[in-house]
Image (spheres, rainbow, N blue to C red):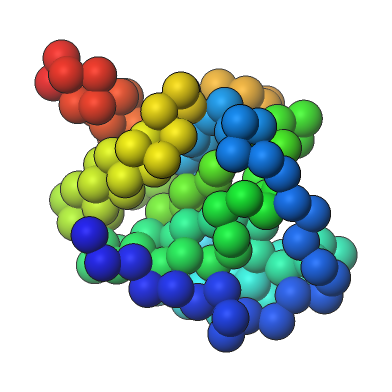
Length: 156
């Protein structure tokens, strides 16, 4: 799987807080709640405007299935209140409460989940709304995460 690494192109406002490999307990899927045509750079700027150090996720997936690494995986993200230290966060670019995910995005999410679970085999695949009071990643996103869970657990 090809992952386009943007971690050195994005400018963060402060150094990353680091964690240990064993701290990772969750692989959390999100949607950005933006247009599906939003760029990683525009999402990064929006997160900076919120007072964060920059984009809060580790990976973003665009509508054509391109996977972008946007922060180092062992950096503590800003994406799941109360669970950041324990989470690797993947965001589908777009709003999937009303819109269905393109198949390319769903497939890229599955492939990325497999890659990340190879690195963090004890991590639980889940979604943002399961851990916090939110609709993220939207009802259609949740359906895709449930499919990913079935696929990686070998019952899909």
